[in-house]
Image (cartoon, rainbow, N blue to C red; front, side, top):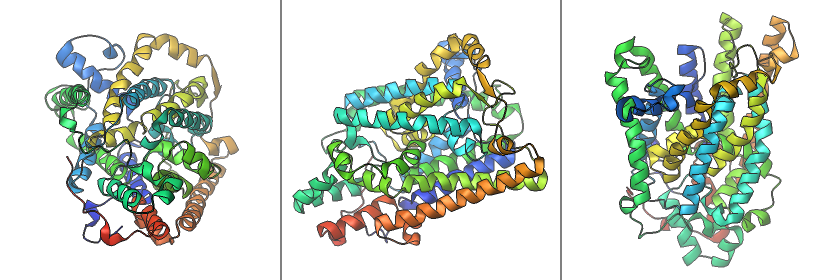
Length: 488
């Protein structure tokens, strides 16, 4: 797709570049706080701020005190800014009531899983895999089959066309034009017509959609209440409660995090599912009505390149400070204290995997999608509130059950391999080399799948790479590509 007229900031990015910014956000946070970015507890505290400032009830606040979470605020702003610079929100994307109901259920499921983990997939993949966590690797391995099962079931219910890393109006227009004015039979054979069906209806007015208005109002109340606490309250992250820089660092880290996610569509659920998709036939994807862009993206391992890019950046920072300055390696499973792997991780994995697929995005990707205006992201965040409720009412019982079913005190892979401190650092170096090798192999393999070179794979956005193939396959003409227009 010809995007020469658009600057670096006003177009979509590659997964690898988006992942790089996610990694830089994590590294910034680590250098300031010596841990990786926390998210879900912060959202619970933002929910509690509504109880403290507006409803004066005592539900989520039974466990979580009211506060703002500047990472989330920064993330929402970063994603919103990305959409503004691209002159395109995603409010135009139309979802069926069935899809929105599943997004709500996904938020509930995912939210409960974060309390069992504890931590979301962002915590365990971007953060946990970077610090070589045994618990995080366990969650990934156990969760992958559940992600695929959920993906399969939702697709069989006719929701396959909704599975896109990102919805871009120009790409939707081009997919429609290729199907209607081009080779219709060839487009339908590979599923290209699914790239615009369902999601786009030119008669849809998002600001006359009552579901959108209700959902936005509820999320808006949470954001405004948290900001009130942040500016005028006396909570831990309130501006008047301590030094200013830590909150600035949190805001910048959140902004970089969701900027990278919004510019590329980076998400943990896509990244862990992509390698397994190599073994899924095109015939099966067509049966499930999976969009052409999605299947090419999966087959070329583009989401995996974004995940690896993010992990490599943080892992490099953690390893350097561990080896050179003897900083401790952050623990991805600090609860219950002293245990690295417990039954909560095994129970959380299916919830996190299935929930993220139902929301079409993990938690941090959902913040990016909220900033861009995706209704599924907004509804998913509402679901989180209800997902927290079982834990806040039975926190002692759940924590007690987890504490009595612990498996190992080992927190990371170097500790698992050897007890020698020097040997552990050697294992850490080998771990980083393994990540770098995996990234190089992904770029090599993915480039071949898309018929491009490493530079194109790392710099061109997903739609640009995929439509370059469709142009040659269907005789498309870039000169006829629709103008990129403002869609609000």
